[in-house]
Image 1 (cartoon, rainbow, N blue to C red):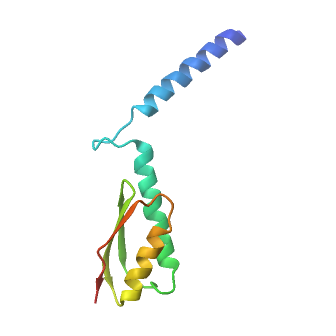
Image 2: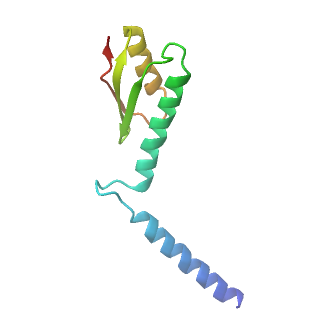
Image 3: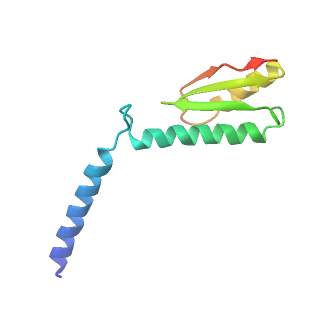
Length: 104
């Protein structure tokens, strides 16, 4: 193959992959990247909550949709509830927090 033919094949493959990846959306109309961003936010928050000494051993459920984080579960004190919100807010990409944690 000539260099020109290799170049044309490369350009066609790049164009095809660009069209393929930009047209991938979930049934809710969200791109793959948006879903991955939400999963990364959830994972980072969960890891930070688990590593925090104030929240050690507390089961906090974290869900994220379009950068909006929802915290659910039960904590022992108002300090723990506030700390969970503070941790969630510190993660890049978080737009809003719904802290639905209940104090036992």
